[in-house]
Length: 63
Image (tube, rainbow, N blue to C red; front, side, top):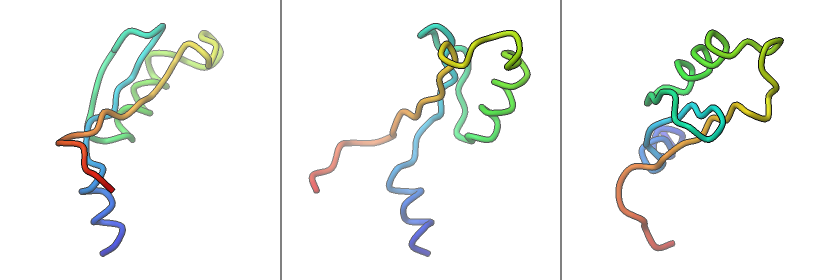
């Protein structure tokens, strides 16, 4: 139950970036990881050019 609340608290979209350009997005990180492996095989592209980031939904909350 606690883990489910954490997911809701930090819901949002995952972004796949290559050379600081957004290539694709998804709510599911597994989809983004698969896409990164397909489009940018490790032997062809150095790791430092590929980034995966999350953009959070909703309003900022005070803690």
